[in-house]
Image 1 (cartoon, rainbow, N blue to C red):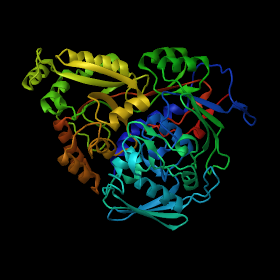
Image 2 (image 1 turned 45 degrees about the horizontal axis):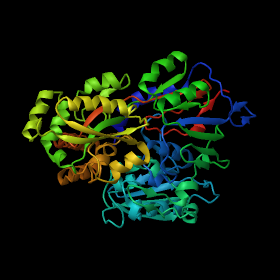
Image 3 (image 1 turned 45 degrees about the vertical axis):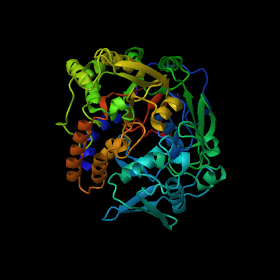
Length: 556
């Protein structure tokens, strides 16, 4: 239903993918590196510099990019992604059919696929996984953990709001999943690692659903800490928290194994340290290159690969804070921000200013949406109208992450500094709260109400407007701190429409509704960049980060 939108976007994405195929750079020396592959005499260990610690090894209870990066090597879902695009493609399901009413999906499954524990992948395993996610309770059924199931399925069995109607294994190779309401983005959504199929045997043996703690500080299960089992090209070996995750090639993988026989995700939180690790040859590559490092790396001859900016960086405003529940205050904040200055002074070259909460290439983007131009005097007048002055200044907590880079937020400390100076210039007093990304920052933002204005963003997981505005606003959540039944109803209706024309109109109206309500300020669409050593001759760069390392090619 989104073919036109996908074709529009594919042109740029395909160009990025082609550009990633042939890489040239200066040589970098590795002091050590795994076992040599006798057949082609290459070091078959691929070391990637991760920007942050993973949140766990159970993809159903994860929602961050670094965790998904690891998950994509171990696990596979029913639906994958066409290389270099956001289009859905066959995964563990070779094909599927949708009923006319949009409520029933019949999947034909691959044969001869096994999990890493030797058990068979089949329709029973598919149904086990979907039933499991729908039956999450307690801490497992919170935004901090099963974020995607809760958002996309609109709840859980215990809440009575889930649109998941059930799963039936009609044979070993056929599974039928039903929904209680149409969801136009269901098939592309299944490409998310959160919907990956995991070994039922391992999930039960290692008590995957025994999650403790609180939403703010969850305690992972034994499975999520040390025993993930999927069908992907790599199997789990070791997680050294705060240091690294090590994977090895699964010898019975159904698909192509490739040159890489061992993958090490080395956690290097500091952007400068990641660059130095690449320069010294101790890692083969890293993501989220700092804008300030691009020139030096390019001059030194390292390979720089840009992704299409399929993302959004925003400043959210938590309306659980009384001052931010006042639309005049939210409008004042919007008018106080000079997005052009932010992009020019802080963000990578090629970054585009954002007008709404999704990129222009997604269907329903509205070129006529309400905007809030940079106007400090208008901001001051709105604050005065809301009752704030020099004698009674507006004081807000400003939350931002530290020691991390995200594709949509490559340098959060610099972004914070830029925005805080602009907000203070109109008389807003800020209390800065900078915290490590995982788990502290995300848990604060998504797990409770103790936050004010804050930096966050999103990299699109698949090409559907519901993945952006639906994920943000279709249901009440801790991040935004509001309930807007009119907006929820509009998003619920839009996600179930059958034709692209209907969706285009509906989501254009939704985007206008969002910008009038103004839950936050969409800031920019930054360009994410990866950097690699010379020996990495091909890397499967993906706009939605669907990058699996059995497709990496090495020259030495």
